[in-house]
Image (tube, rainbow, N blue to C red; front, side, top):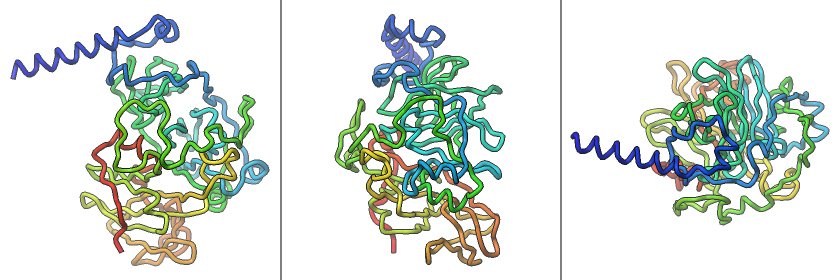
Amino acid sequence: MRRGVAAALTTLLTALSVNAAAQTADDRREWPRTDFSRTTVAWTEIVRGGPPKDGIPAIDRPRHASIRDARAWLKDREPVVALRIGKEARAYPLQILMYHEIVNDTLGGTPIAVTFCPLCNAAVAFDRRFDGQTLDFGTTGRVRLSDLVMYDRKTESWWQQFGGEAIVGRLAGGRLKQVPAQIVAFSEFAREHPAGSVLSRETGFERPYGRNPYVGYDRIDQPPFLFRGRIDDRLPPMERVLSVQAGKRPVLYPLSVLRGARVVNGAVDEIPYVVFVRGGMASALDSERIEAGREIPSAVAFSRRLGETTLSFSYRAGAWYDKPTGTRWNLFGEAVDGPLAGRRLAPISNGVHFAFAWLAFSPDSEIVRKLSP
């Protein structure tokens, strides 16, 4: 026992010394407030992405537009990150997030960070409150396994977008709470939340919003950029997958499997969930103009439990209906007509990412190859 503990401590101390030795004078000059002695990952996994610290500027003073005003520059097919907290709903267009990657905002009284990593097709929202303080986030100019590495401006600790864990600095080992978010077509958000708001193009920066700087990046056999690690060969690297984290082991649905479906009733570890699928959204990482991107589906997951009842769902006439009540539901898990009108399904941790990225962080995921009849 003692030898095992001693060996583990030796390994840890060796890793820490290697990480400390890996720091360059430029690193320390650029990050004088970052405690590089505290890390949870190997320093060699963190790669410079090209732009320096804050070279991709976060939006710290976001302005918001109405649905009506946003229609002047945002097309129906364009993808947005949709959030709803309490009675407030807001859409964050990928055409803007593409150039900023982080928006520090407040929605429904909750301070949030809405993040998007184009290299992983990962849109993740977080509650910015941590350990009794509200944090603001910026970009480090680094990636790990191709995924965005953020930093908080209070301690200059570095945070991994996937999972929201602090991986370098004083807060290393801490984890942010995720806020449910979905990537959907703007038309879907506008129809279901006509009083909602949209992140405005008035960001304080001059950027070619609406144009995709990563043309062709999401071709299914394209190699990922700045990825150090082994590519999991169970799926093509740029296959988009819906991750459903309902049980101990994540379940992955390739969007190519979901393409012909509209609803999937599933369960894992005795936890029932439902997947809603809707076509008609443009890929943000395909064509030069985002609005012209090839069609891909939106896919989201929710718990099928509502109180003491477990619902099952079917799809007809453009909407989802539950059994036993026959209530009509929308893509956001909101009951819009019927006995359960006004109720909401509890979101299950889920998101749509590139397969290579998700499997790099969660290699134990179960991949669904075929839907049950």
